[in-house]
Length: 491
Image (cartoon, rainbow, N blue to C red; front, side, top):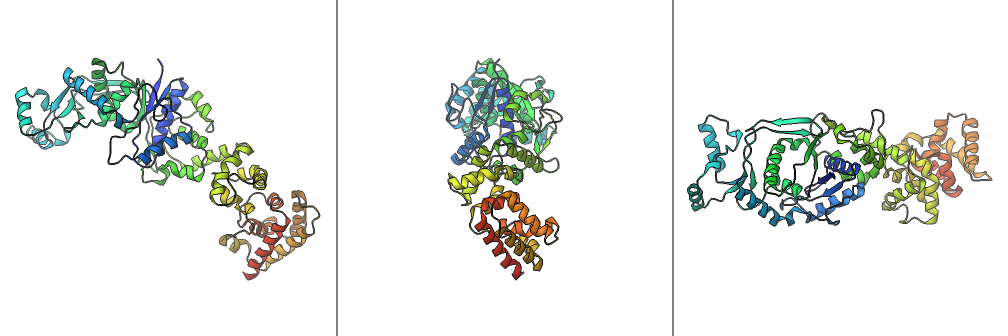
């Protein structure tokens, strides 16, 4: 059997990291088995769906490297892949289910169902009571004469429904636990519990990996699959695996209102797609007990859905950042500079592409900067001082390092030592400053170099000081020391 998985989101706003984790596991499962990953759009909610969200979904998957074999803009033998374009398919299948007796017309209103439940001494919250299974043709005609439009319901089987869940083992729902459910509204609009399995059946989906919040609806899908198989629409029932919830703080599902749930936040901050994929894969799965860092190729090689945990997976931003930082440090210099340029260019610090001079500076500083960065956007604050004529000094850094006579003394000594250097190179700069500030002034290194670092970079944290000064050049370095002395004198 060729494994066929699918990802079928609704284009309704932000892209949730839990949704992407589901896409990732379906993609990795298909890739691991050499199967097919189908991308399908559930876009029949006209009030909430938007073309912008649809485009954003496609772009998000492509950014993460989750390519699809069938779906929008790729095509395939089972299209169209947008639910809104498949109305005729659903009408035909609904008609076959009605004709075969697997589905029936239901005219009861909610108020009538509630009244029957109360009359029987039952809780109205139990919902529909399967009453309309037994309507006569005369009763149906009478309801139609009243102007009622029937919904179409599936006739649920009278036996227990069980399945071997790929994540949770055997799951069982007792007979009668799930009432006959609506497939098609009275106005002819098909509902998600109907169209989703129909599309899966027609597209030959073999494995459905989805969130555990959808587990209560699985008996409906199993019953519908049995009916679809009987009428020749489905070939077999897919295997189901219900993935653990992604939670925020505590045990609650990660809310859409929580900023950490929005995929765009990580992209804009400059997470590497491979770093984020690595972390999302750890939300319910692990490659080994003692290993958290792996490539996307290694994920595909090792992924086993039966090793996904059934326990909730908490989204830990600090761990996501740490994993991303590890991937960032491992980038070759050329790759690092290529990825950091868009962030520097957006801040107006370099051209896109950079000039030859800017590129040379980036390549020189890259190995040193990578060790100090967690996400790519940090390059703006960390490296920006290298690409401007005059640096803007952070007020907090100035207050900490450029206040008073001590700072003036350090800056004067540094200026004198550097002004006399015959060679402007890192070893010579380091030797001159150590002799002038540590030995000459008797300062501890932190007191000696703090004012110089803030003068040069505008911040208390920067790439290595001596290498940065070599890249800046003598003229810009001395100008910054003079500007910082003015600030220190005023303080």
